[in-house]
Image (cartoon, rainbow, N blue to C red; front, side):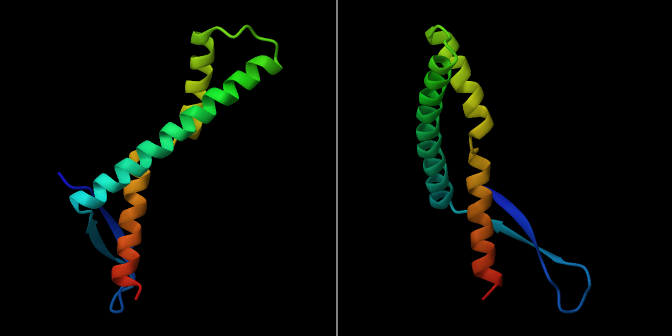
Length: 100
């Protein structure tokens, strides 16, 4: 099922916005998923490095499970989810379609 999102568009005849649905093509959706995956892998590597630094700075023993748990906690706080990338792409398409 393709990703779609509705956005409000100002109507010239009504004070209420008209809702326009934007759907991503399969190729656009896959591209956004790949961008998200790449970004999340990069982010997880940064979180692992940050977790190592925090543990050394605080004098904690660097057990791998503790390190990974700390990295995951940091990652969950920072991570961008696939849905964000898809919504961002849908908004970009909406702007191209209606804000000419």
